[in-house]
Image (cartoon, rainbow, N blue to C red; front, side, top):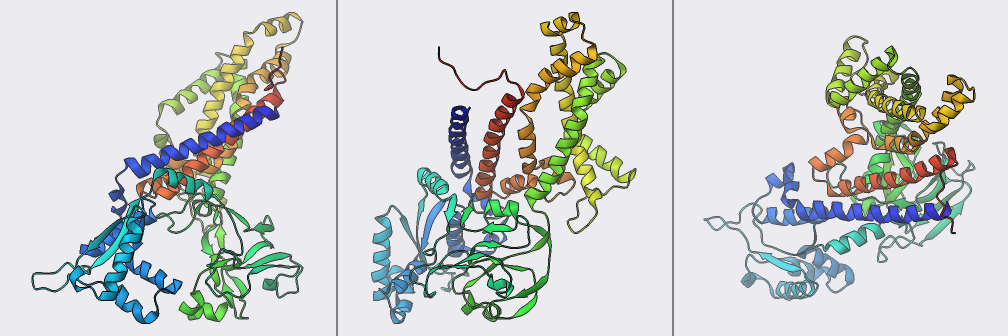
Length: 526
């Protein structure tokens, strides 16, 4: 068994990698990258040279190219000490044409060109775009940048090598003055005034201020030492990782009395345990300076509703439980009383669910539930009523019930015609004993394999159902990403689905083997 599971895991990992590679080839090579500007209001506002540089910056953000602006290059020269502040302005100033560059600018433009062309970049210089009267157009200022397409191989390698991030004290730039780097272990978390027993590991120079901590929120123990990165969102939730987008709480802010490191106290939704490093934030914001003592100022806010995964899982798991509770017994009864009234009614229901498009009967149930039973037809995260879960759960459960009824009936009837059933009847067993002790157990084996998949895929949500009832779940995430050409989310969600598929297959095999002792995953040599 262990050898089989290991083989399945290895094959599953390779399959997940293949899925990601294929998705990357599709979105980065076969789709027109210009589509990303379809809903970009900033793109329509820019013109001339400014539009060209904006395009390249967005191509970089979406993962298509490596892009370096000349002004950023000059900034790095200043930080490295090659340029001082006095010469910075002269080096950064680009003339309207190459002939109008200053001597200092011409020198550094030449260095910039040689350095990046040697790395395979294409260096582009845009001369000033002028009107007929000689004035420079809006956005027509001269610009220089270097760009190159990202090779698919390096994109795949960087994606998988960066999937798991281990926080460390060297995360912050070594040239940044942040004081003494290191980790501090304390039994009394300073966020609780140093009085409450609450162990924590606090870092300096790390990305997260708190690497390990305890609080009153389930599961009570939290860690930021190892984080999962499925890919950064570019449009759906700009700048936020896909996994965080799916797991972050939603809804209205939950305010509480927060005591900040400076001693300032106010009603806030900031969760100080989630603070991450933001370079220069204290200098840029008086509000941060009044609250924080260092640049660990970027926090996640506490909200009162479930995450996208949370809503999808709650609705999905309840509908799955209902489906198994109703679908299996009804399927058994249909087989037990084949061609009876129950079997005929059940068959009509199965045919109805199969024949009618899912969107049609979902809207039908929505109309009946709203008008006849006065149930909420749209989801409201700020509402405390649990009735808004009823219609989405029913809409998800009904097709699953029909599917389980169909297959349970079929497997039961197949078993009823088996030889062992005839021997059981000749041995004097009653029909009830035959069904409960023999037929049911054997017929249930194939259906057992799908239980882990039903549970795990409850987290992925149901696209149509969630859209109809406006459920803020994970089902809408992939469609939103496709509509907005959010490549990071598309790749991340595809990987998430692939992992769930692999895990569900392995768990299904294990569960099926544990239910049926005749099934073995070990090969015996002769």
